[in-house]
Amino acid sequence: MTENGPMTCYRHPGVPAGVVCTRCHRPICPNCMVDAAVGFQCPECTRQGARETRQGLLPYGGVPSRDPRLTSIVLIVINTAVWLLCSRTGLGDRLGLVPRGICLAVNDPNSYFPGVLQATCAGEGGTWVPGVSSGAWWQIVTSVFTHLQLTHLLLNMVSLFIIGPIIERVLGRTRFLALYGVAGLAGSASVMWLTGPDSSTVGASGALFGLMGALLLLAYKAKGNYKQVLFVLGANIAFTLFYIGTISWQGHLGGLVGGLIAGWIIAWAPRENRQRIQLYGLTALTVVILAAIVARALMLG
Image (cartoon, rainbow, N blue to C red; front, side, top):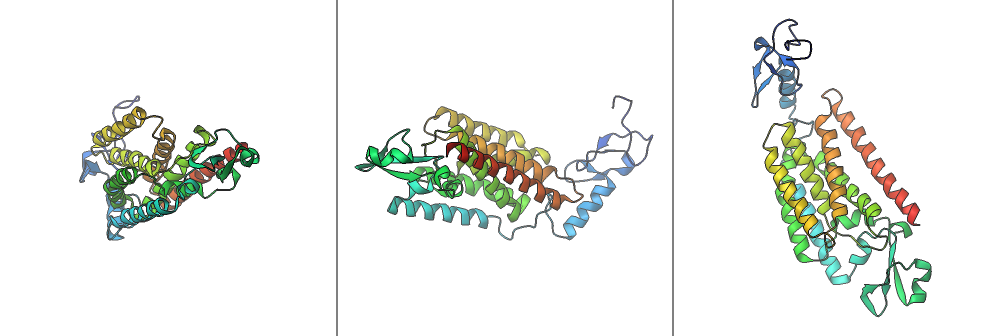
């Protein structure tokens, strides 16, 4: 029922429509209803789905992965390799994200001088470790793959192995990697703006929160069990807030927002020119995130 009267079929004006197409959401009458896996589809969407199936495309335009677990496994290997490198060389201070930089005490590398700038660090008896605004721009990426504690690494990698293949089965490898990268960068941008200039942040949690946000949208779009995803996401948010001060809620927040926006761009792009819209949308989102990082770095510099 609409404000102007009963809902009518978009293909047969004047004929009452009892349902809407589960893909395009247009009203359809009994003569136009084609039984689908979930609900009913209109004839046009049925033909479009058949073409995509013949072309071997996934629901949102991606190409099916031969092994949806492979990408997550490669990411896990990279994270583990970085952890091993940091545990043996102490490079964690240079790979973690520090918005401005940090003045470490020479006689105790585990201590630092809060609020001390690069120009006065040596005079305080410290060693300057650069941050993003002082030249270590790579930290916005390397921090997403860096873990200092084994338990932190294990928790994140187990989560990635569970969530990653599920999303890759739906989106394909390219869109999954784009989603992971955008969420990770969004987490870094949030850390840049919401943490102290000399604080250090590491971990893949921001990217993982982005995956959970996107999974929530995909489940809702497919009329799946999105409430279960929402419960898991809510539990992780509660865990973050409970350990606030030791867990980077800033990175989690940024990653979640980035994942939600990227997931919306991928899943809600119209079928017409879907690939182009997804590409332009994700590129624009990435540019906005990088611009936010650059703006903050210039402020701190």
